Length: 409
Image (cartoon, rainbow, N blue to C red):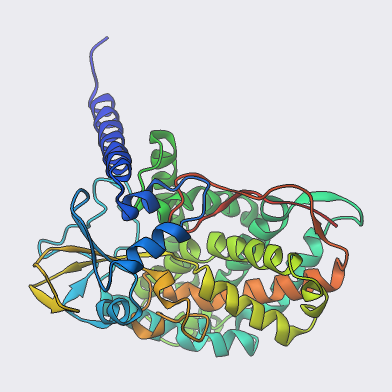
């Protein structure tokens, strides 16, 4: 049978993914702590993050060609310095070999991300959501009540509650019609590996499927924005985020970009943070009962997002030679910031601000989803307990997403 172009493309993609993975394993076997983080097995990366931190402001991963920092001052400087961008000077992404199919994956530059975040702030910012924007608090509580298990039942906290609730909340906020939400939630779940695939190559099947899911999600959101735009001007400012942004005069293309950043950046990080917060509270006597108070649930959520950031790795590229923290990063030099550099700083987004992670726009909704879930669960299930070891998903260095988290009501 003759070889087709599709076969050749698939083989080339598989080869690139395998070579990238082999390079990370080889570097890890040589003791490279950054490579050990990227190998992303089931062990916690904290010991390797500490090794990077112990090297000073910079750690140079020569085998992987990357400058890495876990130093809070250096990390903040990289994220705020306009000489660092998300692409190199030729416009190429540093993750091009790892995500060769994700053409719809949002790879906006720093200034564009900051602009989109500021545009979304009146509708999707922390204050707006807390005040009831898009009915997000009410929608989150209704979804949680719908997924609560029967008393005494064992269930998977992530797969059966946190993940569907987080996806459902995002889709409700975006105004996806109720009849389309089940299929759309499946799309969002398939997109999740793309966040980790920016740093660690996924298996060929997962890479292809998640890239296709991103394309489908982008298309779905574009159709949704177009449908909103065809409504009379007075009817656009609906209760959902897309309608409100369009009603405020935000260009449709910007609304599509904001929607995609939210759709990719909120569901899986929120589900992961829900599980992380619940497990930490269950491990401290009296802490679970105290989380029934909204203020305590918010404090515990902020602590989780500080100590176990929603996005543990952030990538940047130098656009010119940069002298920083005693080292010279050359033009087109790849830099990775470990978000745990900010774990000792106050606030849920210690390295956030206007120049935070690529998906910082999604963090206010993540925080609301986690806070609401923790407070609601602690109230409804006071006897909640673990029912086995929680396992993280392999090849997940950015999210540390859970593969399973068994609990009992």
